[in-house]
Length: 235
Image (cartoon, rainbow, N blue to C red):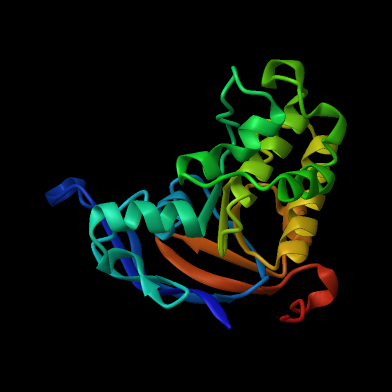
């Protein structure tokens, strides 16, 4: 089943001589549970692509469908609620709330959506993250790698269909980077969530099912990456 469908996506910045076509009719799809990596030079359009897919930026043409729902066919309020419930975001900067402990930061999206946190769900997430013994620690008491684990848990807590990760290891050393990648892959498999990640580190693409390259606003698939060169089975 295709969780994400991107159809002829276009984005233009500026006008006249300053006009830039950041996205030039990008189309692709991803199935449930797939892990995709997007690479490309700085300014190639990869961050614009991720922002449009996540509804953080509005395209000038084309469609983004998540679970067959057209993201830009919705009103702004409806899109905000849909995004909160169906898309998880992981950024290079952790954006944790410094006054909240690990468990509270992970549960925060549920509270924003006026949902009562499920203790069993919280326990499972802390176990997946390997943070059971850190639940009462504040962000300032954690390493960078541990803070990014909390950010991943927060992104996964709503059980979104799609997780978008923008350079999630950019502020981490090589060992922490690989730990975060391993965690993202395990969580993707465990929860059968579709993950699309931007990275400049080609070594990290070995953890992906599929690798896409963005060049001058155009996207092409580079073929299957690591993991034996195949897709994970759909469940």
